[in-house]
Amino acid sequence: MAATAKGTVKIMQGNEACVEAALAAGCRFFTGYPITPASEIAEGMARRLPPLGGVFVQMEDEIASVVALAGASWGGWKAMTATSGPGFCLMQEGIGLLAITETPCVIVNVQRGGPASGQSTAPSQGDVFQARYGSNGDYAVIALAPSTSQEMFDLTVRAFNLAERYRVPVIILSDEIVAHTREKVYIPPAEELEIINRKKPAVPPEKFVPWRPDADGIPPMPAFNSGYKVPVLSQLHNEKGFRADAKEGAAFIQRLNDKVEKNADAIVEVEEAYLDDAEMAVISYGAVARSALRAVKDAREQGLKVGWLKLKTLWPFPAGQVRAIAGKVRKILVPEMNIGRMVLEVERVSGGLCEVKPLPKLGGRCHTPVEILTAIKEAYR
Amino acid sequence: MNFNTLHTTHGRAIPFATGLKLARPELTVIVITGDGDAAAIGGNHLIHAARRNIDLTAVCFNNNIYGMTSGQYSPLTPKSKKAATAPYGNIENNFDLCRLVIAAGASYVARGTAYHVRSLIRLITRGIRHRGFAFIEALSPCPTYYGRINGLDSAISMLQWQKEHALDIKAASRKRPYELEDKIIIGELFNSEARGLNIPEFSQEYWNLIKRVKDK
Ligand SMILES: Cc1ncc(C[n+]2csc(CCOP(=O)(O)OP(=O)(O)O)c2C)c(N)n1
Image 1: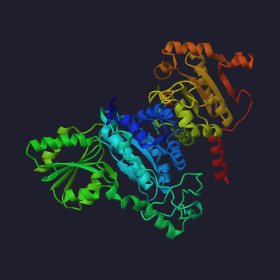
Image 2: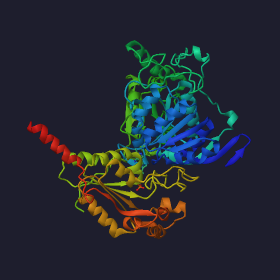
Image 3: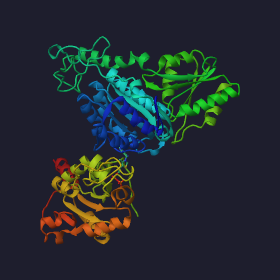
Image 4: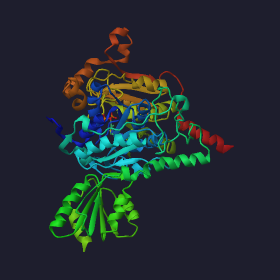
């Protein structure tokens, strides 16, 4: 580890970067259950948390792991769990609970091949819709997709900030490649990191209405036993915390969704290159975005006007950014390590402005740059 | 071996077996499980299969660790032992799975070790012949992920440990409690048939119920 006046540079795999970032963001509570390719996050937390006064517990399964986050978060702590496909399935009921109770916390899903036990040691992007729609009913989450160890660090810090700011579970959709690739990570000094903490009630306990949102649509969140009475309910509730009638219930569900969707501009992050004069664009995320960038650079060298967009936020979907590109180019190519998922969103928001082509890759291998370049050339004609 | 097999998701072998046994009660159904599989993620299924006393034979390979995922502690990792997720030593109490399933209602419960292989074969055979929920805990060394981090770095030394620490239940019955403190009791720990108890078996009970309501 090289410590400079301005921070630390270290060679880390994505899973290790996730641990360091969570600690830097103030996470002091981790519950999880071993699963490849996410276990290094639990193992890192088991080593690092106790000396920092934090808690690591390996629970009996992922159901217990994710629900314990709710307990810790209402206890006033920042909390995280990490898992992969089968464990993420077990967490879905709990994610609904976290959403309806507006509990800030972070859930890392290091994606591996599915369905079921699938391919435990191979990468995948097969869970992108599950992350958005996996629990019952209408709710919203935020989901981020890192493509490098550095981004794993940056987006983990951001995940905690978004969770605290919007009071939602934030899901980090990593994959086996990002998890296990060792590369340079710059860790800024603590004072340079922007850390957001949940807002506390501004009124005294007797004036506090537990589920009444401020103008931004988000209610302040006191910790348990801090003088404020908060009935936390997994049922639809009204502002006082009692069972909601039809009208109150509808307004509540709308608010749960609006606080994410209506703040999409503030939440969404993308990265782009070569888009100014592009006639065609490649849109991707996660590890695939690295192959895509190489392919786009190679295409440029061969004189093809191709641009590149990387989605760092998957949910809320970067609709504005994608629509703007769709209005400029003839074609959009979407390589993904799944059967073609986010391409459906790209197609939806493009609304027929240009042709949208999927480039699925299944079976636990990432697209090579050559494969993407070949598809670019074919589509470019 | 001439078996049909099903590799379930982690922890779910017992509910699969329950479904099969209820659909096809004439089949002999054997569940192979691990200590993490049976005691953690599948722990609920284990106690409920025991409670129902359904005619399955569950053999639990207890290596005191999550081997497959490279060495995290399980509910059967002894206190103070180290694991990938217990780098400072495990502070949790561990289950005695045999006592747990006896309490939950299993009608045949035995423990054996990889070292005492002939007796283990006998215990499993009896379990398969037993009608009702049979549970056999088979201590199996994991030198790679449990032994190495806990000072027992070869399969031989781990088998040696089993030889030195295992005590047959009959011999144990003649010892005083303090003499058993570091011992692991092996053999048939509970057998309802041998005790002359008649505990109803679930799939049989179910078919009786069907007959009863059908004949009406
Ligand atoms: C829902 C879910 N969580 C986690 C895993 C990862 N996993 C596979 S095997 C295993 C542990 C197995 O331990 P044990 O049952 O003791 O058997 P051993 O590997 O030691 O033989 C785990 C945690 C999984 N497959 N599914």
